[in-house]
Amino acid sequence: MFRFIAADLRRHWAGVLAITLIIALATALGVIVTLQERALRLGSARAADAFDLVIGAPGSETQLVLSSVFLQAAPLPLLPGTVLAGLVADPRVKWAAPVGFGDFIEGSPIVGTTQALIDGLSGLSEGASFARLGDAVVGANVAMRLGDEFHPQHGQAQDYGGVHKEITYHIVGRMSPTGTPWDRAVLVPIETVWQVHEHGAEAGHDMPVAVRSIVGAPEAEHHGPDLDAPIDPNAVSAADAPGLPAIVVKPRTIADAYKLRQAYRGDHSLAVFPGEVLTRLYGTLGDARFILSAVAMGAQALVGAAILLVVTVHIMQRRRQIGALRAFGAPRATIFAIVWTEAFAIIGAGLLAGFGIGYVAARALSGILTQASGVVLPVGFVPHDFILLAGLLAVSGAVASVPALLAYRQSPASALRA
Amino acid sequence: MPALAIRDLEVRFPGLERPALAIPRLDLASGERVVLTGPSGSGKTTLLNILTGLERTGAGSVVWHDVDVAQLSEGSRDKWRAANVGLVMQEFHLFPGLSAFENVLLPQRLAHFRLPTGTKDEAARLLARVGISNTKQSIETMSRGQMQRVAVARALVARPGIIVADEPTASLDQEAGAAVAELLVELTLEAHATLIVASHDARLIDRLGRVLRLDAGRLKG
Image (tube, rainbow over all chains, first blue to last red; front, top):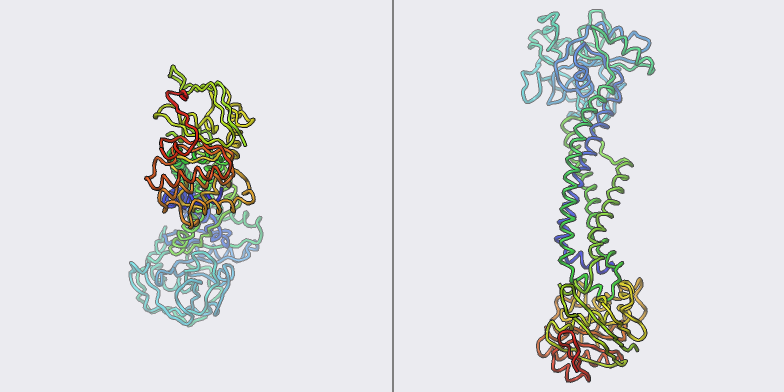
């Protein structure tokens, strides 16, 4: 029987291949939507893992998370410098580190921060941490080597508004990979960022919303800061410390986290759990996924119906052959089994191939997105997917029995006469 | 060896006043070889279908040996046919994509979970007997005469007691038809099977002892 089925499928290989491919692509559509949405969710959640609590000036919570966790450049209002000093001294805080955006280098954001964040994120994989104001630590995926020097650029490479010639950073270390946009960041001492943009800050004193938190500060034409000076760990807790767009806080306990969030949620500051903000975003994402899934399922249903039609027409065309099989003594059950097996083999192969294609496509898509955003998007199946696959196979089995029944019920004599 | 006894057979088709087939009595001895002739529409194929259990009998009995095919269910008729009848048809109904050898074996493979022992040897022997030397040759690359000879081998491979052929030579040229007619008669004789051939082929009519003439569903002579 299987020999016959194999010969039959081989003989109609072009049609079999076409139908299998159509089923596979329709399946892949749905698989990609599911996998990609999950990858986005997992990837962004993992990226936010190291960021328990983020504190910024009052404004958009979402923007605060996107800027601090995903390093998405956007003008953020500034927090008074004293907030960080307060946090560092707070016993509920394990560590707190500033996130100050300062210029770019070849598309990589330069982030002013402190040792605490480097340790808190992933630590170093090579070299040493910054010790002088002119030292820089690069993220795992930054295409520069230890020992390289660079001038920070205003804005991103494609539209940069000038180079801070007076500043030369010296790369002294590299971070371990984190799978987050921070892998593409260049970390420098926050003090240096402050000093580079000091004049801008003075010029626009008491700006309510300091656009300069990005790099909007006017060109620093004055003599540059002394980059050989050692980092002063107390600078960040100084009373006259400049403003900061965001502070990453690692609370000691979960209870502390909630207390801190409560304490810094007010008129002067905003405290958010990135995870919570992301969950809200996922809600929106989930709605989008639902719509996409519905569209994909609609496409699959249409493909299913079209293929059922094709198979049925095909069976009708082969009435004589099936009639002949019966006439030569093949039992009806065998006829049913042959047609069912052929239909199920095609649909099943299509489904499996679809899962494979969907997986590969989602991987490729994730790769592109990772390249663009730095967020590593883990593509993977969960047990539920296999239950779904089993369910789909069961439905295919039921669907395959339609043409099989058709063949089963056919009278051999009338089929031969046709 | 099964012998045939038809009693009061009547087949009617809806919308037709006269029965399509009415045979009050027909007996065939075991091993008898007959030709069934008659104009088209005279009921030859209907009779063959009923004799082979492909079609349901309206009324009457069709007893092969001691099995009344008319009483069997569809599944039982399939089973009975697979065990007792070898079929040769005008359109060979061989299956493309399979070799000559696999075509001969196909009905047995489909009818049995496991190929009965000796079937392969028998298939090889019969293919040699009908003059197919390259048994691995794919069936669609064969000439029509070769195809019908493979079909003859297929009809005989399970050693059925009854061989039924429907216009086996009608779609073949003179030479190929003669070869097939010859083989059909000889092999049936060798197998001691009962042979019923619907044909207008003079070679077959001459070679077989008895001629049944059907006209409008009735047997003449």
